Amino acid sequence: MNIEEIQKKQSEQEKNSADLETDYPTIVVKVREVLTTKYHDEILNNFGKSDQKEMLTAYIKSIVISSLSEYNTEEFIERIYQDIFGLVFIEKYLNRDDFEEMNGNSWNDIEVILKSGSFKIPEKFNSPEHAINILRKMALMGGATLDEAHPVRDSFIGTGLRLTASITPIVDKEVGVTFSLRKLKDNEISVKDLVEKYQSYSQEELDFLTMCLEHGVSVLFGGATSSGKTSDMQTILYEIAKKGEKRIYTIEENTRELNLIVKNDDETIVSRVIHNKTRPSVSKNTSNIDSSSLVKTALRYHPDIICPAEMRGEEAKDSVEAALTGHTITSSAHVLSVTKAYKRLFGLCKKSSTSGNDDFVMEDIVTAFPICVFKKQLYEDRSRRCLKIFEATGYDVEKKKIKGRILFKFFKKVEDGVVKGTHQQVNIISNKLCQTLFENGCDIEMIQQYNSSFTTSDEDDYIEDYIKD
Image 1: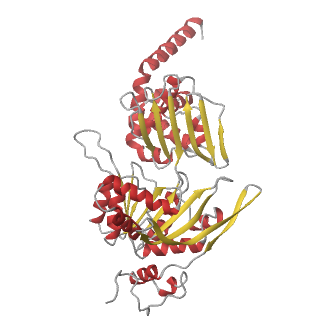
Image 2: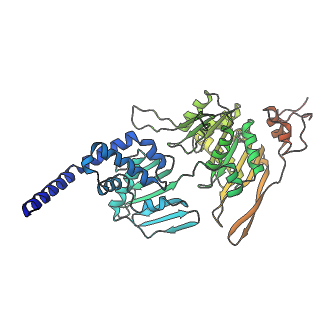
Image 3: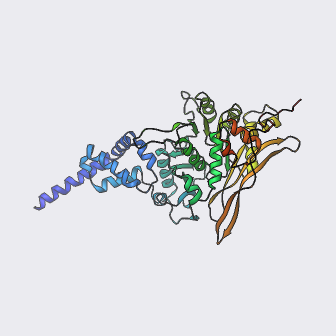
């Protein structure tokens, strides 16, 4: 090859390179549109998993080969991947099996929470602007726009990640962004895992909670953030769903963590489940579909169990009313103790409606949710344990206190910084609860595992509150 040919080839390469740089923004938009149209669910539901890059790169390569074959090089595909999905150092931590959460206090001050504990990481963004661009990209993956008009956003990236981010002007310009990126718990924790691997419950406790939900007794799960409330509901409801006997209606905000669809080997769906998500109003032409409206909608589907995944607003009042009319409800609330769970529901109910005598409202809440589970992530080793299962039997109007009994309790022991201990039944369930379970079709032998003295020949009627004349 002579000098002229070499110069001509170099000129062509430079021209092609210049054409690529000119066309590149349009190419990125085109590839992103095809990805979100053709592979939307796969991208969202697998984002944050260890093989994420391999999967996404394969999708990009297939698009390039089919319509942009002249750019089919490893360097080009890697560039496209980084511009659409690349999250700089974030991705490295997301792919760790022990990753739980990443919190950004500013563009250059970031900490990570692993199962073993938390620490500040050495990595940082290049600048406040760089941090904003990366967070905008992440929010966009979940369908949310993070900009000056919407400087605070929640974005759910499939069933794997939840992002909460704030940018200027909500935070100082020199800070750039604050954010919390939380990996949602995997939906594959079995009953065996809860008992043996995590020691969160005893088998007896899980059998009891399952028995309650299958026989018309509503259950409230209480605890702080990251205590495992939703994961526990998922595990117990999945056990119920796979029997194919109970119809379950779930309600979640914006994204779906619960997955109760159970299939046979031939892909036939066994479970009877309806999954729903809220949708906020985004314009005057779209209605606001919140948890409260979905609880009311659920009643018309005549489900056996209604699960508003979390109560933090008006849906609390609707859930209490639904439970009082004979529907089985299971839900969760952020609380610090068992009895505070009922006070939390009282506050939510009064916030949504100031009418009604306070004592009557509290009595309704206690009647609606006879069973409350208190779960906590322990300080010593960050393990998650069910500390108490409580039965509420009434409300003392004079003392303004919940009446009831602790049924199960975790007795904690700590050895070399590791939590040990046992889950024990410390009280029998009330005769009133026994009769409720029995009248809802529960075998007496099963009930007697939790109250051996219960019989169906008792003279007193523990369901109705009346005095014989």
